[in-house]
Length: 230
Image (cartoon, rainbow, N blue to C red; front, side):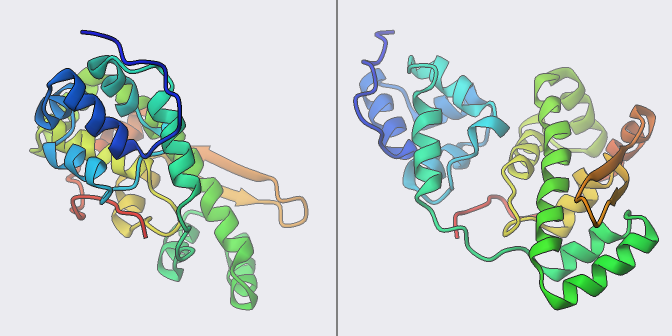
């Protein structure tokens, strides 16, 4: 395959994928197979109906770049610029906050609830930090294809379906985080957490591997098929 010329200007991820597919005479379905995602995922990226995933929380750009002969950082660069131009949308919701407080130290949880009634900035900041910790742990699962396939079989899902579910959680933000995300990915990894209300130091107790394995064997809660930009 003829390699793509060096990226001269930053374009939208969808435009770059569309152009390179045309140059290499490949199809979006073939690209989806190479990236191990459903064909709809690629189609939505190309059309702009799906927000480009955060480069640090996905492996699809590396897979797509190898398949299309793109420069290693081209897609990531385009994604970062495109995401920065998007509006952030709403900032979380109270239901998600209450679910996370269940695993917080009781005394701290009560104080945080009182503070949340006076303003949500502090609560949302903690949600964002906890989400980042959980996503960092989940991201590593993409590198273990065998374990992911076993987990998919235990849940009665295809490998691609479970992989998509993981990818969508990794790209979750405060405005897209769902109750299913908390149940399927956050609780199985974060056993307990607390925060020093004076210094802001966050202390998180991660679950032992055995507990994570038990949690992986229960069925996933079903969610929508994609996450879209607001």
